[in-house]
Every structure is written in C-alpha cells, then in structure tokens.
Length: 228
Image (cartoon, rainbow, N blue to C red; front, side):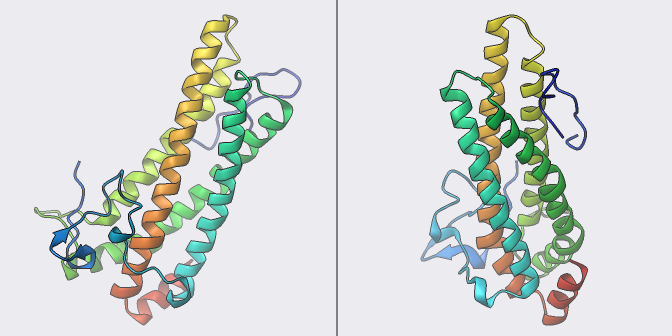
C-alpha cells in the first residue's frame, strides 16, 4: 500500500486497512490494594504486571513476543518519521514517504496477521481458562482481559486506516490551510496509533502471556504453538 505515487504525487491505494474494564482478581493484587493493569495511564506500572520471564514462557508464546519486538522496532521508525514530518512543517520528503509506506505495508501484512493468529488460536482458549479460574468481570457474559485485547485490535485498525487516509486526503487539497489541518490530524492519529500499539504489546507481554503460561496446560500450550 502506498500513500503517494512518486509520479502523480497522489494517493493511489486504500487496500488492506479497512467501558467496561475487566475485573482482574488474584493475579494482580499488591498488598491490600487491588489494581487494574488494564487501566491507563498507569498500565506501565510494574505493580500491575505478572512476573514476566521470557525464558520461562512456552516457545509458542515466545514466538508471539518476538513478533512484538519486530513491531516495536517498526513503530519506533514510524514515530521518528512522524516527528520529522511535523518538525519540517508537514513536508513529505521522499525518505518520509518511503518510511510511511513501509510502515503501513508492515502493519497490513505483519501486524494484522499477528493479531488474527492471537484471535483465532490463543485468545479463545485463554478466555475460557480465565472464566474458569475467576479472572473475569461480572454479569451473564463476564469480560476477561481478552475482551480488551480484542478491542485494542479493532482500535489499531481504525487508527491505522484513518492516519493512512488522512495523509492521502491532504494531498488532494489546494488550500494550504486545509492541507495543514489535515496533515495535523494525520500526525495526531499516527501518534495515537504508536502509543496504543506500544501499550497493547506491553499488556500482552507482561500480563496476557504470563497468564497463558500459568493457566494453560502443557498440552494446550503445545497445541497453540502447533497452530501458530
């Protein structure tokens, strides 16, 4: 997918990017205070994390962590390009254009594929295990942290699509003020996308995967890895 055609300087493709926090029980208690690790802005607080030890994770969960590391690297490059884009008065150089195109291509091909694997293979079995173990909210259909992770996946798609389309839309305007406003919206949505992606990965690495290691049997972890 591309933002700008190198010859026409126009957007040429849109293809590919089309409140209730769960109650977390025993796993997230520190002394007498019960914390919700899914509630920003303090979600990065280490008190809210289950002990994360990559070496002790099953190799299937390690594979997902490795894919997260790759996503973070791409995220860092995209964020740097966004900041350079803004600091230069929203001028899209060839380097910036190539970096944006590369990130959206990566998001479309890799991040979406990664999320779908989680949704189809890991999340269903882990959600059920959380229900059985009491790691859930209240009501007839209680939420677990998996519901929040799936919501994040939807929000990531929305933010990526909006950012991508705003970048292309700005180039269609002739009025400088309209261009600047649209680029500014694209920048802000891009920054929000980066922040949510990082937070989502933190939640999965430090909360979801350690819980999967704890709650799933060896056979279930083995099956997850086989399907991945």
